[in-house]
Length: 173
Length: 128
Image (cartoon, one colour):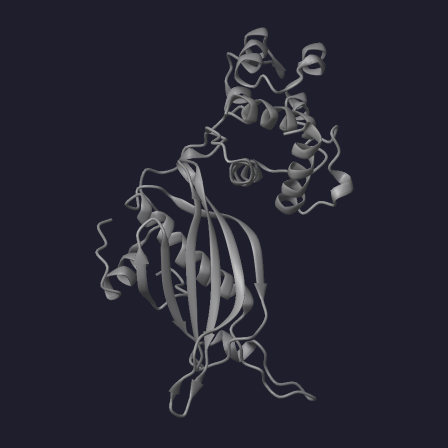
């Protein structure tokens, strides 16, 4: 199973915008190592920022893949911009909003906003923007090198199908 | 639009896309050799040029694709006369004189200079 970094798609406007959420949980083993306590510091469990970038890449990647009915092998080619101002700690919800900026046969560029929703005793706080992640995707079969890849779309695996189905979105791939 | 204005906009795009300093982006700088552009950067630059100047760029229009892999166009590490003719036809914004005097395949990347990019945009804007 692919390592998924989004839990649910909450909004999809085909070829335009997708919003997904990720609940940060203390049950995630990597949080225990990121960062453990030391002799002079308490433990500081937080979602690694590289995985927040991956969460946005999965959100934007599904949006780009969906635009062509998942026929293209959509791969992350470049992180054009990644800026995050705050850490996401256990109990928080990360909300990724990806928007297609440009889309051609060769690939797509996306803009992304990361928001953080803090838990509280009476529910959840309003989302606060904590960063921006802009990405570039390539349609692998349209690459400039003319390299041939397997016919099967190995990018959009069963895990993505499950994600879409549990989010109430039809997944015909 | 004046060439100098086109250059300024392209300089800004290349600084952003390739994470280089603005003084590295000179007219003579080659995108692949001097500025470290990779094939995926060409897609990024294409998107940014389209956004900035408002024209569309077809795949392979800015930089030729597949020519160096085709035995009709490259033989024994050198671009054939047929290959040079194709380049002249496909990418008229490139100055091919250096490649014509030394058609080694590694020199193909050297034709893609910032100046060629300015010429490409200038031509596109004039025909738009």
